[in-house]
Length: 448
Image (cartoon, rainbow, N blue to C red; front, side, top):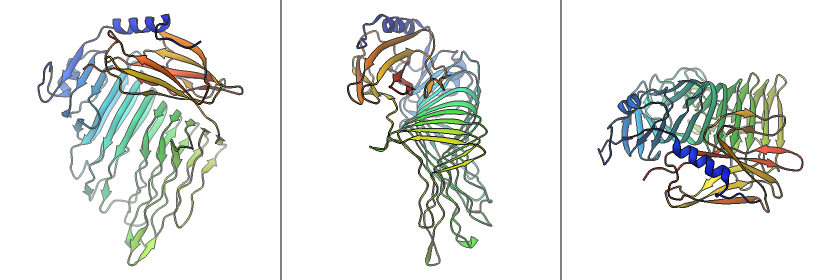
C-alpha cells in the first residue's frame, strides 16, 4: 500500500498541529511590518512556553534560554546572534521543547573571548538545533584557550542537523594544552544529521606541541550519527620546541559506556570519521610532520558503523589506526550496508511541493512514523538505531516496498498547512536479516 496524504492518520495529525495554541513574536532590527521587538532578549522575556519567535535578518543580542520556545531565524547566513562567548540553553522540564533554527552565533571580538560556545545543560525536554553555525573570531590571542563549540551535558533528547563550527583561534604563547573537541557530550542522548565537526587544533605550548582534539567526545552517552563528518584536530605546531607537530586527534572519542551508531555512505562519499593530522611545519628550511590520529578511540564503549568505516589520519610520518579499543570496547563495521537515511528534498513554502525521501536497501519494507515532538526510545537489540518520534498524537503510514535504493513521497503544502510548526518523520525499515530506524527529519513550513 502506498501512503497517501489524504489518509486519516495524517489528516488527524495536521488538524491537531493546527489547533495548537501559541503566539508568534516578530524580532526585526529594521522595524519592518509586524515587528514586535527590535532585539531578542525582550522577545524571549515576553514569550511563553510553546510560543514562536521569528527573527528576521540582522544582528541581535543573545540571551540564555530556559523556556520551551521555537526561535526561527531567517538562515545562518543572515541572522546573527552576538554575545560574550557562552550561550547557555537548558534547565527545562520534560514537557518543554527548545527549537533553534537558521542562526549564526558570533562572539564579541576581544583578546580574551574570541570564541563562541553553546552549552546545553540539564535539559529534560527535547532540544532541536537546525542550520546552526558557531563562529570563532580568528583573533590571535596571547592568553586565550579555544573553547569547545558545542557542549551537551545531562540532556535526555538533543537533535542537531546541518550544524557546523567555523573559523579558528590561535594562541601566541599558549600553555601546553591539547585541542578541545568539536562537540563534547556527557550523560545524554544525541542525534546528529548532516553535520560537519572538527576538533580544535592543539596549542603549540612553551614546552612541546600538544595533540589535536576529537571531532566528537562522548562519556556515558548514546549517539546516532547520520550523514555527518567527524574529523580530529591537528597537532600543535611550534618551531622552537625542538620537535615536529603534535599528534592529530581522533575523529570520535568515547568513554565510560558510551554507545554510538554511525550511518553513512562510502560511494558517493557521505559522512566520515577520520583522525586529524597537523599541516606540515616548515622550520628553518626543513619540513616536520606530525603523526595522524585514530579514526575512532573507544574506552569501555561500543560503536557500530553502517555503510562506512573509520579512517586514521595520514601524514608523511605515519598513518593513524582506524580504531583504538581499550577496556573491553567493541566495534562492528558493515562497510557494504545501506542504512536508512531520511531527508526532505526541496524548499518548504506555502503552496509548494516537497519530497520526503528514504534511501535504503532495495526490496526492504518501510513504515513511516509521523509525530509532533521528538521523544527518544532506544530499540537495541531489537533494531539498529533509536525511535525518535514515538509520541502522541502520531501517525503510522505504510508499509511500502522499495523497488530501488530510493523511495519518494511527494507532499503538496496546500492551503491551511500549519506554519512555523514542525512535523517530524522517521522510517522503520525491515530487511531480511535486520530492522533499522532511520534518522528523524522535520518538515517545517515557515510563515511568508
